[in-house]
Length: 424
Image (cartoon, rainbow, N blue to C red; front, side, top):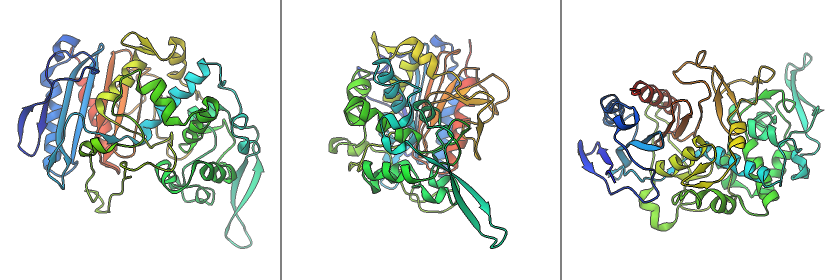
């Protein structure tokens, strides 16, 4: 099997990496799968230069086309402060890239007949039965904001959780009185409270809007993960290990990094290179208080490529089937349509709707970057991202530990570089 290469900025030299693991996808030279080696080299050259300029500590990028890995490069440092070079098998905090995996878990239970997409969430979590919507207005007498509550027009459903139309938000996505009632993020919540405390707090917070009327990023997938636990009778991590990670041979994916793998954890800079502010990322060597489906997992680029390739294959990999073909088609269709609008910062971006766990491109035009109608993607707050293009038979996973706005630059950059490298 072809050996991968790893470019390490510390030595500014190419070195041969260990042989591909038995669980890796088959490999190919770029030209064998219709990609240009010369054009793919732009990825390595640019990332190497950005490491040297102090923009990112390091990165791992894996590209598969037509079911074979044509590019797998590690650049820069796993831990810049320690001078440790980045290995191809570095373990990253993948933040919201946990969400697609939790969504797959829910759809497995759908296929098992354990839940339905149109079920009310309260069927599994009774505390969500009578949610209220917050309405904030300015009191003309006092000039101060006043928050009033009105009953939700309907209950949130499993579909609402999957497509982010539940009315739940993140506390760090706004400064309104409603946002102030929410915890800031998934990973923060999982380390500060138990699952029971978390659900109780969310069930008492006012919704940002009536379920089904708008798209808003928030705790929907964390609540979905709790539904998975109730419907399956197992903790989220156990369910995913049994039904997803083990069948796909994702040996380095989970919710905590065991002691024997600590030396492979990728680390961020101590300060953000743009703002100068201290960077804070979770300690993944100790378990959180609960396994949050919205942002608590760790993985490697090689593991996540296998998960993404399973989706591209419409539910199967290496002869094993995790999901039915029609289920994956359903998940990767747009579930918003023209009736559902984005609230505030619409993260999928122009030209994209949202499926059951992913942003889904509605058409080739309108979006502000190249792509194909039907491609789908998502990313994580700490610098990881993936996207799948069924038309081009492409899977791309990029991983770095660079929280902050800089991560958005690399999502666009990588997509541009990969698509310009298509030769046929």
